Image: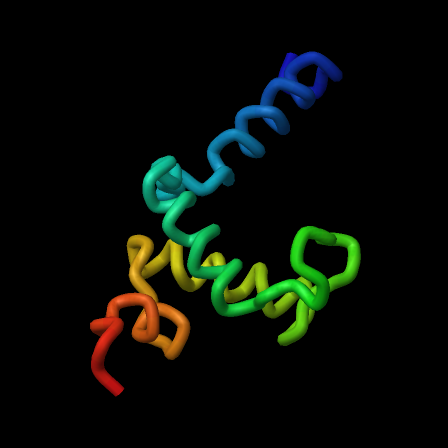
Length: 92
């Protein structure tokens, strides 16, 4: 009975379901928007308006890592791009 193909397939499917991670948290739309803005500021395009031209700083892997770090920080990054945006315009 326990050696039947149906039982083995069901046991395998159950084992796969139990092995899935349960701690994944969905990213909110607000955090994703904020991180997209920060990525655009940290990695400006070589030619404005032409996304195919690439980034003036870093590559795609750098941008993905920056975005993931931003999401992990809840949409707040402590780098030069975000500090320049929050600095008062008249002071230098």
